[in-house]
Length: 126
Image (cartoon, rainbow, N blue to C red; front, top):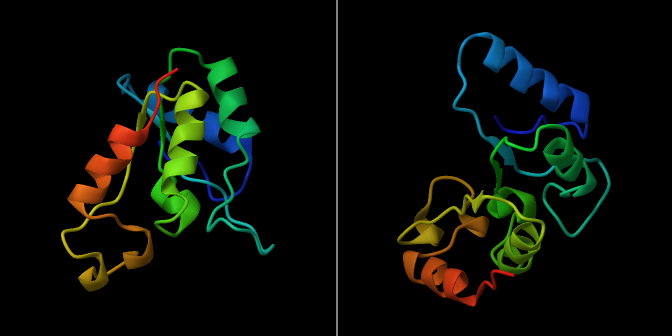
């Protein structure tokens, strides 16, 4: 369940609750940042305190980070990925394309498979 576009924890919690009430229990949450009208270095600022509170309230819910959508560019994916791992996220969703310049969408935030390998080998599990 991806976080809502607005930085509202209760909306995210409500989505998890509705899905689980429907009988689906294999659920994970995906943090992809939050929309804002402000100019920031991120495409979708991470507002880390919101997913941290989600984890506090539902400790067994797997939490994945989508640094590609948070950043909106290749340059910051490593630092956002490392922050997510430092905050004990359960995994990363990183956009990849064999030729990002030819991708039909989000080409600025995609890594080649080789770059994904380099990024993964650069991350530190603490």
